[in-house]
Image (cartoon, rainbow, N blue to C red):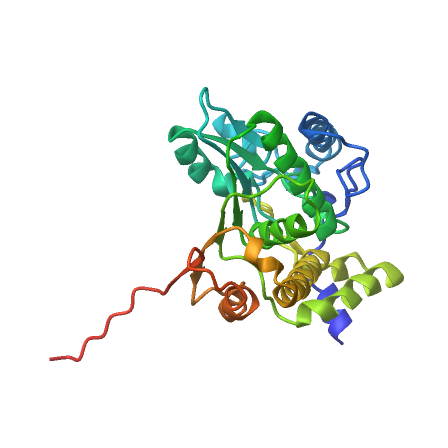
Length: 323
């Protein structure tokens, strides 16, 4: 009955099923950011030719982001903020790598990036693998692919900014990837060091149902039922974020959070966390996606230096006694 219910959802569209070729992965022979951007360019060219040029007449609505010239066409405002962006500085005081969340894009942190750039930072807003193009990009991407792209981006900033501090800013899944990178630095001295980290609602804890959801995705492949591969199938009217959400995406967030938790526990036992970079984190207590307790128990309970700070905020609550 559950399978029947899931299959009764809206039909998948071209952007849910197409497999763009050559997306970056942890096994890709990509050596630097220049080559990464070349891969990105080819992906966007494929999207133009194989999606935008082929969508059905009934799908060419004014709010479909894949309908070129629509109200939600990502290039409508001049810059396609789904793509990696780099804001240089003549005399940079520091480098900053911005990491967006799952199903999101570089757009989500562009305002922060511009502000930091205006204050003298060299800013790199990285498009994570699987993102910015079509929702089907999240059907097969792994957190290891995304982590590999973070290492590549950090090396780029270190090469461009010798002797300058490099900061990591991560939002949601990007926050978990930032923590994973900092933990990797404890084991691999060849990785560029992080001066400090800023985490915005880091995805360090999600529902354990995400661990079981992988079976839904496997059933989709085994039974040939495309809709089972999706947690939600939605119209794509957001220019810079997927509305549809693949089951695999949630599973990768779970895997990432689990890997971070295990490594944090090991680093705590070994004393390696004394070398962990300072963390400034922001977390809402009413976050419907990320577990607030997990940020505390899964990260800050392990960080005992005074240069780590967690700022927790709530909605604006008022009480009127009627008097």
